Length: 208
Image (cartoon, rainbow, N blue to C red; front, side, top):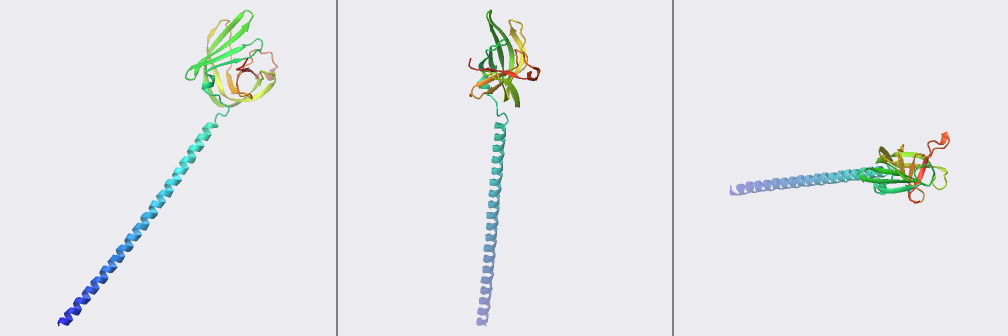
């Protein structure tokens, strides 16, 4: 009888051991699967984040490039805040002084020099950046007609003063010339041109 009980007890212990081993093996396998799934999910999130960051970076670079190319012929506001331009022609202002004091608003003073003295007319102006425009000008040094591209426009507003009751019409343009200096393009105040050249503007330079 004792021998039978001992055999039965041994078989129960053996079965219990096998069951425990299977549970441990199953638990280990489950833990391994969960770990692999977590690693894969983390990896996918990292790849997604890197891809999104790359897209944002490319978008910013493209936007910056677009902005810098929007006005390729512009002249900065600082460059025209206190700039004076000259032209030695007849029957026109020989000197034009631009002054910008508040934001993009300022004044343009047109001075005509004559044996009887200097006469001035001044207008309110505003500084603007506009899409690229092609204009024709009479070169200040050779008087030949050439074509230039501009972005910076000086818009004339109300007349502020004139000691000769002179009226100046038409907007002005500022651009960088071939010498690296600034030029001011104005309407042809002197007139006396053929009709086909009525659109050609005058060039004023910063040096006399």
